[in-house]
Image 1: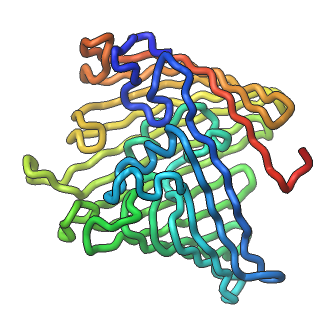
Image 2: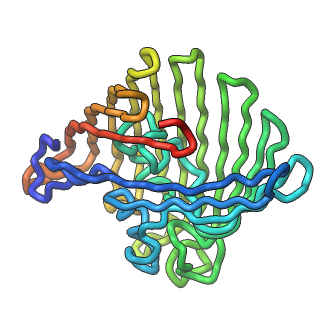
Length: 326
């Protein structure tokens, strides 16, 4: 429910929960997967099919059009090469390693996705990915892909990236991502850079924190001589009351200096509070209040410009796994 009552019935700057004042199907997802195993079979695969508002948003910007691979969230095969402890090689379509949030609601702390998830990073890639785990503390991954959110390439260049993971203690972990490559249609001369840092701290079994920072720079538009840039940070807190109840808070600041990702040069902020209650373990209910606000009149109240919007939402998520007793 959007308190601004926009006549478009769409909440501004939201990812999967854009439709307002209505019941909505975010995503129905079905996953088939098999991890490669050095003791049994070194070949593996992952197929993830999805339908709903979430899949429409994720695949909307693919150069091939929305109907191309629209319902295929991930599709790749894996090979565990006999190198050291095992070098895993994946090829196909896979979700991005960037960001503190993911596409699936059940794996996030809040029901809605944040500003950084929506405007600072890509959703997915198509290409080659490798990962090597040195030990329990360090792992490294690299990839060569077509670019941001494109199964079909929009230029003749390629995007490369690297991910470094460090877990010195079970209560602390750091993931550092970096990628660079040409992303503009038909242009290879410009390079888009993205750096993404995610720090997770869990002082106790019930209390956890996440800090996320993103910085992007590179593409040029005709009106600007200098490359465009954007940056933002997000802070998350989650506290569990036993196994069935939890509270999650999120605060974000996003600066789209040139209006490149949001369409308006502005500083966006948002605060979200989410209460989660699990029914019989598999049915997850979430109740959420969120306030988005900007230093520009970038929202809509009815048909008029506004500087902020408040929304409330109730979400249901049912999770099942055929490998486990029902």
